Length: 230
Ligand SMILES: [Zn+2]
Ligand SMILES: [Zn+2]
Figure 1 (cartoon, rainbow, N blue to C red):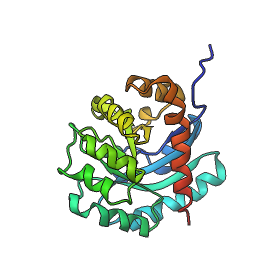
Figure 2: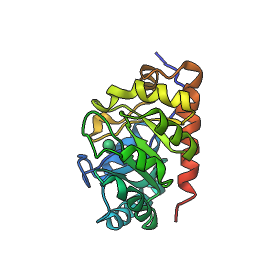
Figure 3: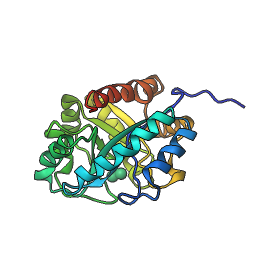
Figure 4: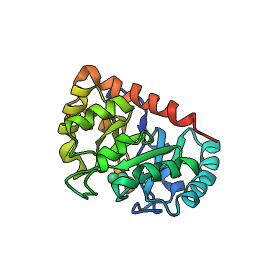
């Protein structure tokens, strides 16, 4: 039985390896993603400021080999997590300066809570690409996301997914762009096109916007990110 999906391949900008609390090496994560039919895999381990340069260099070495061998784009980046709100701009700037291609911030969410003000600082600094699972998003911050071109994440991860409906509702009202990411920490968390679409639908994204969220927005972010590649 063939099931047709909006997107034919997965764009997933937010995953973890054993360089933070994920279980796989970057190489194994990429191999599994390639086999699962991914088009884009973001490697975004939990980081602050220290060690980011080494991590990015390490990931870039693997990325080169992976992209030569398999039909997969690997984006090297970080998920800034538990950084004091007032230092998020500095941490994002540092990550970009040492070669991160994508900067994700671990948003304020009911589970795994980070400091108050994280969502606002991440949106305000103008250097963050994706605000991950921003479950406690305010209307004003959703408007700021639209203004600053920060993608708001709909999360496939249990716990973080509790507030997807709220995030989607505010994003639709403000015009902020949405993405669906896995936030994978283990192999079984990787997405299929069909599951990614079910997460989007379950979060309340209307049918007429699925193509925008699952295909057009990921392509927009990919274009932005690849322009940084060195
Ligand atoms: Zn996170
Ligand atoms: Zn994460």
